[in-house]
Length: 256
Image 1: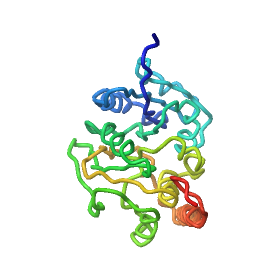
Image 2 (image 1 turned 90 degrees about the horizontal axis):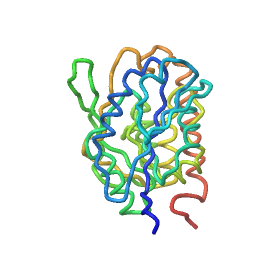
Image 3 (image 1 turned 60 degrees about the vertical axis):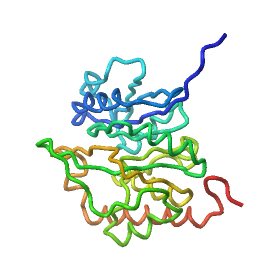
């Protein structure tokens, strides 16, 4: 008799050498997750480049796959990692962040219970260098997020989404249908989030699902991230893609 085959959630992490030292913390938070019966996780770590600076921090664990590729930014690294995403769901975990207990189980519970939901997100706390945490104002009500609900709020609030794309858990087939993350130097995860919301309902959990590390080397803290000309171009293409998708007669689940 064949042994039962577990269903799988794939955690995708893009990493470059400066953030590699945080991988053991991310791994610890992953090992502490308790999944529902019949489920297992597979962690795919994709280095954005070819260096000797990441591999020493990659855990020796059969559930972990490590790959390298030519540099193109975190969105490219995550999208390339989908070649090894052999599960029904894909969960984002940035190299310098940490999952909170039961996050994966909550994501799976929500998405398994309602097949009309394409993705799930959760509340985030900033994880500060002194070990303290800080929340964000303006989280939406816990529960379903209707198609298209995020775009207008994002544009009206300084291009800040109501929910954090770093907490995303998404159906793999829907992620692939949208082409993965956007080919942008930054905001690629927000672009994906708004594209997902343009074609599918989502979910927001009020329980904290992620500790978002703040440190001086993080990409979003660099001056180039807020360069006005580049930022304007990024926001324009993120919005245009979401609106174009919303205008199509296509969605998840399939619409007539």
